[in-house]
Length: 587
Image (cartoon, one colour):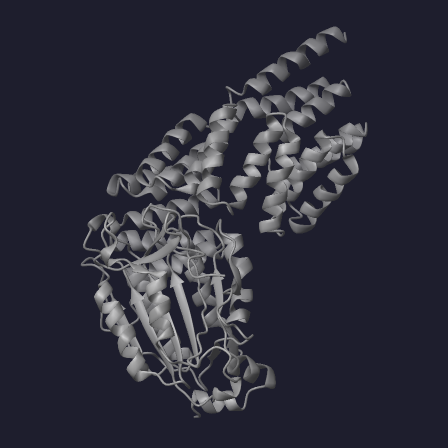
């Protein structure tokens, strides 16, 4: 999979840094809301090194430019679009902004492209067009970027970076007239200096198609508030990103940087206008660009398909990607995306066909290898899934999702040591990877180490308290430690967060077994199966409960359901033999 992470540990992030031009400690009254809104938009897709090429960033940059000009108070003459610039070109444009921007103006800088995090130097970098993988002279460091921003004497500067070095910068009236008439709260946010950061909150590799960017644009498009502080923007997109990706966005103040509680304010235009189309072409020779005659381009169809996919409109997404493929039969990304739509609605064979085609067209595209592995797991083929995950890791050696998924497949095969190694590697690469922490906790329960499992579950909950999985799994660990009351509390919390969570109902059934409430346990196992008809563990647990009731017919029915799906499942085969033996002895 092409990611914006240059094959190392990073994630998409939105960084918001309100650098005020005056010296630290200068009175906030010096900031007068009379300035203009400027923007520098950078998109890096075509690199001098072909291995680094990305499809989306330049297109995302153009889309972001069009949005802020058409909907917010950014005049076209104050918005500079740089597509595939070198390091020198980026630095030169930042230096030019020093001459243009006054202490009353506002500056937004947007970057989409590769990012890099250097562990040894504890430094993040942007990779411009002329970046070399093993030679840093053309990399643009966080430190260099911050120095350039400090040199721009703006009232507020907002940096939006859809790249992969999360944590690298942490800890009709004119727009000015509109600000003057705003509420006191907005005026105070505008007047006070701000040094804030918003990030995706993880170092997980980010696909070329950024969920974070999708919801950033969606929220800015949907906003109807005249004044939109960046903190409010973050709050409106955070949960959507969590629900549709494996990252957890975060925001906060950059420590020791002079933040005084202010914020960057997006200001709506009085009426929405149509932004002029940026005169740049990164679409490729196979895409027809026709403006104003009702013909949808491949890019437009692909973007709409991604939006439908993110909004769980899977049939519509499938149709959109099919139209893209009709226009461009060699589009590996469209086959991969259509496969994801099929996988979401459990059309597994169709999904495999599309992932096969994506891999055939672009063998070094690691994402379809990952997705085909996920589909093979759904088809009950963990050995084949492991091969696909291993290929994804070979292509992208720091692909945390592939390590996590391979660890789960190893767990399914009871290769616990191999599973532990993969899940631990995913966590080493990204200490905030909630799903890997949760899965490692589940593994430790299976290894008979519930105390150690609780450490992982508690860490996952600390990072994302609204993720139901770790709450339910923590409850199961507590049940294994005979802490039945605590276990029930955590399972109920999981069901509060996700009412249709089959795993939580399965755990409730096991809890009732421990309480000797056999009939109640059957109710919960049945509920889990009602939600997920092929849930192996719930079928096996219900079979054991039926066997305890001497209802051998029902017990065998559950076991046979599992064996029909997974003929080599040793647990099911062993339980079937036990049920048949018990049935014979009962006669």
